[in-house]
Structure formats: structure tokens, C-alpha cells
Image (cartoon, rainbow, N blue to C red; front, side, top):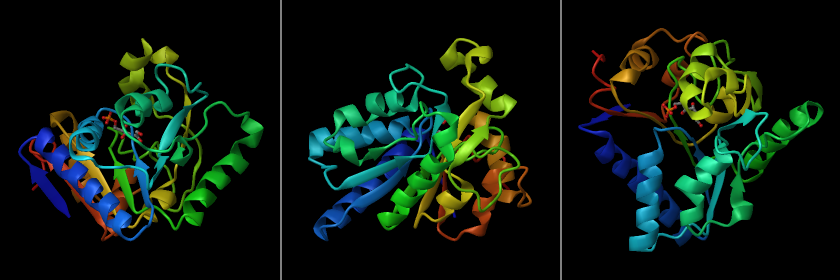
Length: 247
Ligand code: F6R
């Protein structure tokens, strides 16, 4: 399904309201809400609205367990560019989530341990009954998480090599492309697919060409987001600009 809103502010509020409804619904049943989260510019407005709902409307995150999609590798959690820093600054520092309920791939591990670690990340999600909702952005390569072109539809959490365009897009955050890590740990397409609900968000003209491919293009590993067409529990939430090339 594709839903288009006039602007990203309106869209972000709608997505935040859906997350809040899920959390409250689970609270009433004394259950945890298990959320898959993304970083980057796209979800910032959603997190800001969740923080507002916490501060002004008493939304509690005590029953929320989160798994982030990805992290650069190698990456120290304290670095300005780490996704740990991003999540703390944009969401976790401002809500009442238990720190022990937050999971972000560890960019500090020795390569030798990574495979076991990634498997464990996957197992933790499964042990909690899977992700209730996965939030996604989309890269200009068509990546979801850091599943770059060539990723398999059944891929799991693993170490990947970042596409050149992805590193160019991250250059500003790192003060030059040469400083952007060449690798990352990411949940796989298969991991993402297991979520009971998936929301992919995209804003602005810059995303219009890749959104056209993702929504209307041939399903292919060349554009990993096209795999989402195979799922009936995926919703593309777009602003008018990102949707402007759709027929
Ligand atoms: C981030 C992630 C990426 C981003 C994508 C879009 O955790 O998994 O797939 O969602 O690169 O990035 P922005 O939102 O900065 O355009």
C-alpha cells in the first residue's frame, strides 16, 4: 500500500501516532511492543513526535523493546557519527525506555566474533516473538537497512560492504567520503521481512526516482527495496515530493 501526505511533518505525525497506538495496545494486554528502528534524516520527525507524546501526553516506553537496523563497522558507540549517538540524541535520552531494552548492532567487535554476534542479534528478536513493527528509510541505491544492491531476499543480520553512493551520501556527516566506514552491520532483508508490519518512509524530490523503482519497478536484487512489493504488510508512506514520479 502507498499513502501520500502533503508534507513530511504530517506524515511523521501519522507514523508516530501508529507507533503510540501499538505501544498502548500492548500495554493494555501487559505485553511488550518490539520495534525495529532506523536512523538517518527520514525518521527524525517521527522520533521528535514520539518525544512530544512522552513529554506532553504521558506516553510511556516502559514496555518497549527496540532493535536498530544497522550500525557502521567499525564504529565506537561514543563517536558523533555512531547510530548509538543518533538514537540517544533523537529519541532514547528523552523517553523512559529501559536502556537494557535497547539493541543497536555493536560496531566495536572483532571481525572473528561478528558472525556469532549477528546470529545472536537475530535470535534475540525471534525469542521475543519477532518485530511488531519495522520502520524503514530508503537509500538512493534502493537499500533498506544497509542491504545494498545484490543482497539476497532471505539474508540475515551480517557484515556488509557499503555502496559508493551510500558512502557519498554519508560524507557530510563524516567530513569527507574518505572518512566514511566501508562496512556496516545490518539486519538482513529476511530479518526485516519477518516483521508483522513494515512502514517505509521517504521524503523529498531526492527520493522520487528510487521510490518509483521501489514501488513500480521490476522486483530484483539490483534494487533491494523492490522485494517489499512481495509483502502484503508493507506500507510506503511518502510526502508529495517523494511520490511525484509514481504513475
Ligand atoms: C538507517 C538505514 C538506511 C537509511 C537510508 C536513508 O538506519 O537503515 O537505510 O534509512 O540510508 O537515509 P536518510 O533517511 O538519511 O535519507
